[in-house]
Picture 1: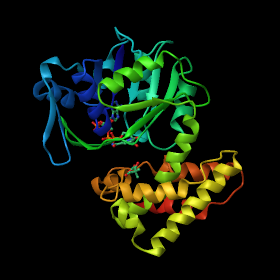
Picture 2: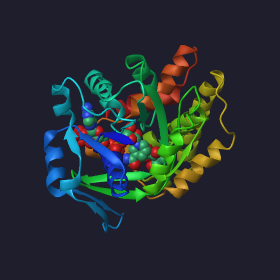
Picture 3: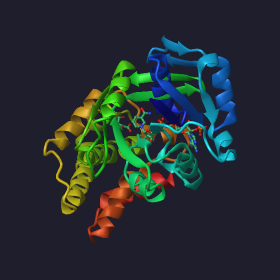
Picture 4: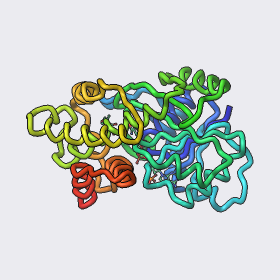
Length: 311
Ligand SMILES: NC(=O)C1=CN([C@@H]2O[C@H](COP(=O)(O)OP(=O)(O)OC[C@H]3O[C@@H](n4cnc5c(N)ncnc54)[C@H](OP(=O)(O)O)[C@@H]3O)[C@@H](O)[C@H]2O)C=CC1
Ligand SMILES: CC(C)(CO)C(=O)C(=O)O
């Protein structure tokens, strides 16, 4: 089984090092030539949250190339069985879609790890012959530098085919991921999981980013909880109106996520602190657009979307 990992950031480096160490045939694709060269020179290192070395993969054995190089070639020698798309939502543009097309044939399954919604439909429209899957993961990763990644928290991952069912042969992929130490499950209910994660991110991420607080501090005052609840009620209202029923325990689960990840800096707060653009358009922005399509108002999501965009 050949896996192409596209995007050598936090989650891409985490999956690369663990899969490569487990002996899986992985090609890693960076955006820049510089990062690919550094990885070949220095290898790839995984550390824990205390900065202790967990594993190292030698540069000489790493199969890593830059997308820049691929875009200059007309064809790739070895098409992938699976492509793990591990870039941010904002990076999924025409030129990336073109190289994803170069890596794929009709057997390829492209697995998208992004938070938020909208990307699956976009990719399916542009690459109609590729099977596009979604992965929902609660793994936590943070790139320290071009060749070092921190495993910030172990989690679970669900993989499924939105709007359809998974294939029996996908069990082989799950075995490879398990061999590498990722708790992974195939899901025929991935649509619900995508929307469930959407609501969790839409409630937690923008508020932590605006107030610059770790997840747990959202629960520190009743005013904060009140605003979280407004985002939750509006979001659930839109999904219900579109016929998507989520578990009625979801509010309690969001509170639980804040408690379980109390010290975490949310991904949106990280982006704001690093001065890079956030995934707000695909999270709260997508809820606003879904609401508009059915003539509903979601004023809290709309305001929060604008506030984050203005940052
Ligand atoms: N980090 C985590 O723990 C989790 C992340 N996710 C989701 O995973 C996705 C990725 O997140 P994360 O890893 O944190 O993000 P990062 O920003 O750390 O990584 C994104 C990577 O994609 C690379 N990239 C951008 N454009 C291209 C391109 N055209 N070709 C190849 N590579 C490209 C970037 O390269 P460069 O740096 O050179 O620009 C960067 O290395 C997000 O959508 C996030 O929501 C989901 C759950 C957990
Ligand atoms: C669940 C949560 C909020 C954990 O930080 C997350 O997914 C994120 O930060 O994007």
